[in-house]
Amino acid sequence: MKVYPNPANSILVMEGVNTYVIYSVTGEEIKKGENNSISLIDVSELPYGLYFVKVNETDRFKILIRH
Image (cartoon, rainbow, N blue to C red; front, side, top):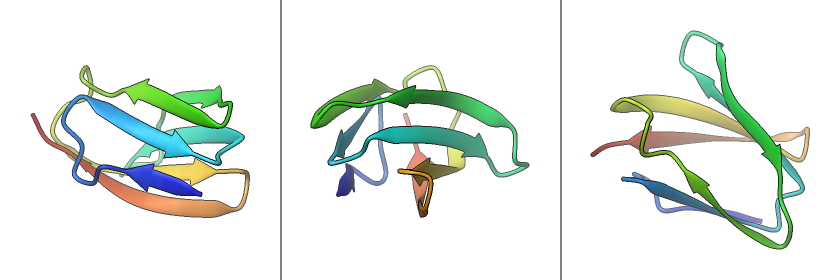
C-alpha cells in the first residue's frame, strides 16, 4: 500500500488501497471513496494544511496539502 506524494499539491496517488477517508485535523470528514488498484484523488480544492487519511479501515497516514 502506498499513498504519495507527501506533501501533495493537487493529486494524491493511492496504490493498494480499497477504501479511504480524508479527515481535517479537527476530525471533520472531508472526502471518502473506494479505489481500484491505483487511484488519483483530486485534493486541489483542499486548503493548505495537515490532513489525516484512513485507508482500508485500519491504516492511517498524515499528509500535507500545499499549493
